[in-house]
Length: 315
Ligand code: GLU
Image (cartoon, rainbow, N blue to C red; front, side, top):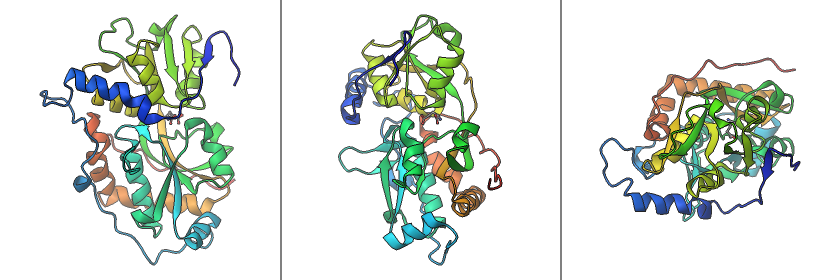
């Protein structure tokens, strides 16, 4: 990776559990989650509160090479994130994934004829999503994945199924950062290959950009005073803040629009349209809202109705 004067790339650390350890320790030390009035629960969604999605066993999609291969294989392989609380999180003890994106994966898979136990989740970092879809490592991807024109040249997008916005996470004791203009000369951490990383690089060149593959390692560095702020989508940052409300806070207003799509192999229009239909149907029958309330809603984010689906033609 290129290193320039204002971009520092650090050694990759992949042990998410290890990376989040300070978070957990700090949470314990600060007594977070011990019933402080108004603070969101520290634990993830209670399994009993999650909706069950009706599976359509008769569903067929022979026009989709991805769906056909998954059917022959007997399961779907879905790319996701594993360190984003309430959005896409993997329990290191059980290997079970949870969060809003995971629910989106499950509800759309059900519409394609796959029950939840017919999905294998695979963690893919922001920078590797396009390659994973291009080389068939995954069938589709649900992981805070912003739809944009550049990415559409490489992959297809169903949706959007949610609208997020770039924001800033700082320590609760920080009073000098309230928006991206305050980042001049400050160390701000983000993940390369993401839209928030690119926006800081392009629009706020006086910020000192620090990069790690995953946001949880950025948060680790924020808690240990190695960086001054972490930037990515508000959805992700609010999840970290909700885990340790005494130590971390999200500041300012979102300064971008990040419409989340389900990434699919670019040529597989049949799969993309089937996922568009699945999202629309789950929004209509209340599954989307139930899933939201049981996951992302727990981080304190007000439910925003999903934007209209963009069923763009095949090119
Ligand atoms: N939504 C942004 C993106 O797709 C940031 C979150 C992420 O890296 O997944 O780049």
